[in-house]
Length: 81
Image 1: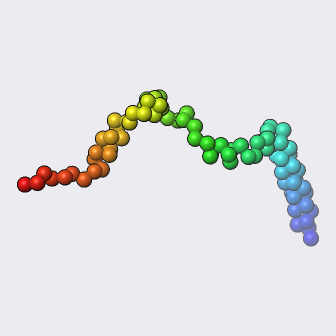
Image 2: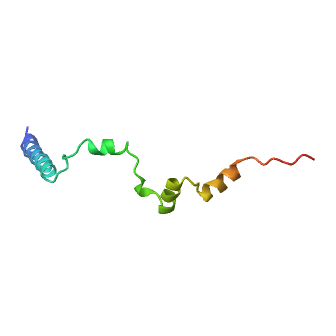
Image 3: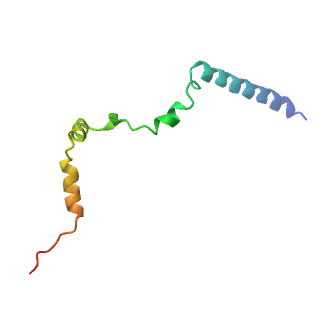
């Protein structure tokens, strides 16, 4: 029974801390846009691309590095003997 004298104030203190954290999050804008990050992942933005890659995409030319990779992946054909 005497443990209740410790647990009740402790639980009220934790409740007060949780309420304070909630109101701090609301005031600082943590809950302003809940759907934005979920939709942002669906859109492709080219900000992370290298400038040369983006320019080659616009020109319709391929990247020489990927051409080398593709050449390495293709099996070699031995000439007929």
